[in-house]
Each structure stands twice: as C-alpha cells, then as structure tokens.
Amino acid sequence: MCMRHTSDGRVENLLAACSLAVAERVINATEDSASLGAGGPAAIVALHTFLGGATIDSLAGVIGLSHAGAVRLVDRLEAAGMLERRPSASDARAVSLKLTRRGRSTAGRILAARRDAMTDVLAPLPTGRRAELAGLLERLLVGLTPDHPTGQHICRLCDVDACGHPDRCPVTLAVAH
Image 1 (tube, rainbow, N blue to C red):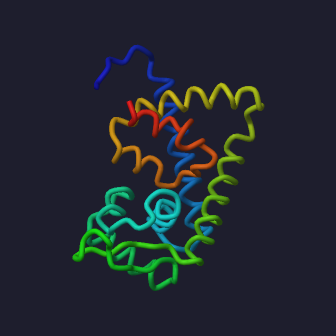
Image 2 (image 1 turned 90 degrees about the vertical axis):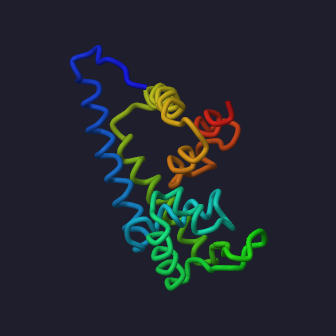
C-alpha cells in the first residue's frame, strides 16, 4: 500500500533515524550478551518463546536466512551447546530443534540485554509519555503485520511475557483478524 507523502518528510526521517539507532542498540546488546554472532540471538529467543521443536526451515523463515544459512547457524548453536537436533515426530526427513538448558539460560540473558538496551533508549521519556508511545507503537505494529510469517519475523527477539502474548500482543492480534 503506497500512500502519497503529505508532510515535509520530517516525521518519516525522524522515525527512520530512530528505528536504525534502536535496531543497532538491540543487535549490539543481544549479540554481545550471547557471543553467538549474527542471527544467533534471534534464533535462540525464537526457539525459546514460540518455535521450540520447529524445523530448520521454520527457523530460517523466522530469522530471514536461506536454508543453507540456517543449517550453518544451527551447526554453530549445536556446537556451542545451545540446542540439539532431534528426529521430527511429524516428518522422518526433518529434525526438530530443541534448546538445551544452556540455550534456555542464554535466551534469558539475551532478553535481559534487550530489555536493558530499550530501558536506556526510553530513559529520556517521562512515564506518562511512554504509555502514549506504547499506543502509537501498537498501531504501527498492527500496520506492519499482514500475515503470520511476517508476525513471527517481527517477534523473533520478543519478550512474549512483556507484550502480553497472546491476549494483548498487537502482532498476534493483527494476524488473528
């Protein structure tokens, strides 16, 4: 859906700059907390929160990697003791990915690092304005979520408890309607 620009571009520019700065903080904080390299934190958190038991193909779709890239990532995570492959109950040709105790513990550290990074980002806003921002962000997330696969990609580093999943999560609610 392409809409004509009705402003001087200031809001769009501010949001783009802020989005990039926030994304870099989240990426840096989560990668530093786990020492797993690119893609590792998102894979661990997704497997911890909503993808447990998924296949490599499912993981690849959620984190935005090719199948070969996801296999290499799973190899790295398995070698680091974060996950294990198990035979899939539904497909004899596939494997199911399960986090180990170490992987679950790492997921907790990743989510804590993400939360700390976001606490720092939000520090300049008074508490009352944060509630206003939450409402605006919910509306933006609904608009950014056309389908379930996109929703899973958006939520690959989500703290499902913090967002109120499933009852209050705007991404979940967007794909339910």
